[in-house]
Length: 382
Image (cartoon, rainbow, N blue to C red; front, side, top):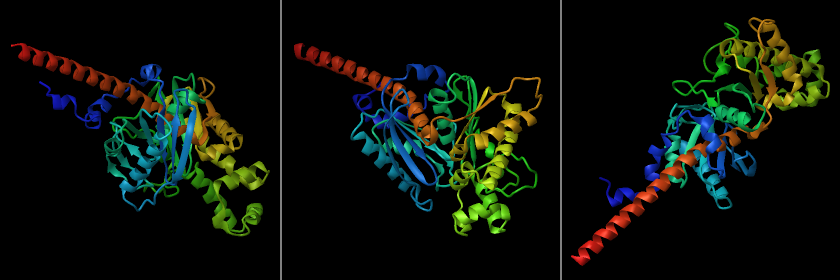
């Protein structure tokens, strides 16, 4: 039998069992989730972005700060998250917090198993933040959060089988079927960037060779441009002049900008990246057969300079081409805020369950108080 102490225990200490009830019924749940503001946080290798998001995916306020140096303890990053949430809570009625982390998150959405750009190794991020904040917390992979946002509010609306590919420094991804993010048995599904596409190819930081992200990512784009510039190739004169001979200053956004201005080498490099993108998408179509591929991440800013060649390569490489329906390949609509918006919206599902549990707890306390009052009156009249 519960004691009065049990019934009146701090909400934070009773939150974990409530959070663990969050299952895979996301498609139905998001339709009935409370229309309350939540905070979404996107944690990457260089920045932490936090924003208050309403039930329609609108960003009410956004804050951004640099990610603490990866050599520092995980608590430093947690401190940064807490400061951002408390700052936003001063001006908004926040009901839950969603974290989109650039790393592997376990199936329970509690621990960050590994984050390549931060010193998180099997870090119980959800539980630690829940202890420090007065609202429930949900943790997920940043690509999963971005895919959810694009399905709910962006380029993937109306799609039942969607694959998102995020092209940044590397390649991330997520799978969404029938309104549910497919996280896999251990929570680490969607690491498309480490599919092997060239046996014995370029060495990848993951330790293997020939990974897809070594041929179709921001790093691949910059690597190829710098190699041509360092070799003083005649085709690289435009970008060499642009950086005044300082090859180390060549960046992905710079290549995209020069390509838009008509630089032939930069256009060719984006076509190469796009063709490799199309090859990988064709492989994923053979395995997953989605109706739509959504391309996000910083490299997707090149738009048709990248996605056009990807569509062409996809059509050439697709298994059973000419005899099967072809998935659409579209650019993401929500830009760099997708992970933040998706994390906030997923957190709204937790807010609903938390609010129900809190209401039931209050009702139990009220019943107990009525029972205790009746017992006192009975003793007084005896």
